[in-house]
Image (cartoon, rainbow, N blue to C red; front, side, top):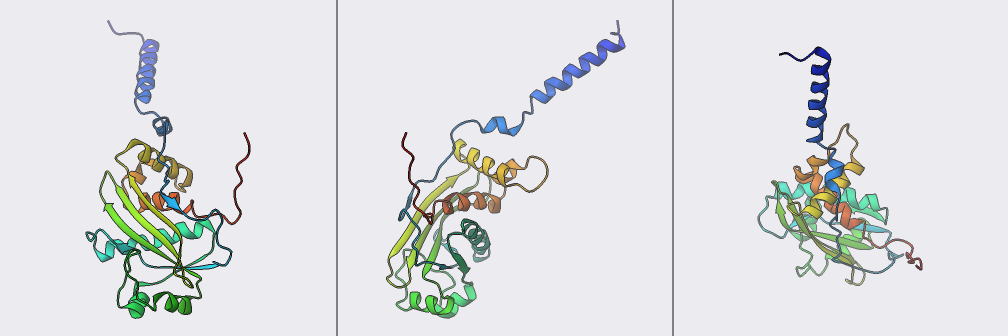
Length: 226
């Protein structure tokens, strides 16, 4: 016997409701702990004398990436730095660095040319130089990006700030943090959170923003008493 039309409509509605329950809003999948970078060292307050920072091109410390792929991270890194408004960040091109040193990139841990810091200071007017080493990169899902950053005073050669972090999207806390970042910083329509776990550029945007946000503030943050 065929069910009356009203009953068929009710049954169809229940099926649609159940189908919807199998595709929940992705926000519900982000409940739980998120990865927080902690391997960062530096002063409590941004150095007042550092008003301009020369940002060197990303260096492939893994020796596994092509120069073209490595260079894609330069703009993403500079964008994250400028977002912090800690100083004026001036990107040094690979062409200029090669003219000054004979190398398009320099590792933060390498023995630096004796005249490098002085040359960068003269050419850019910067009071500090920022290095970026890509120590590991997996450009296909599950994405992973590890990098080391080092801020150096051009006058003294002293390390002012340093970070050494690993972001692995195969772990739930990191994937969750990346999706939350994408949700809060997406300018497109609809839920684009899963794309951050598929695009190396968008994942790097999340990772770089997470670390540059830990640059020392201009004013010391005093913890409120409980």
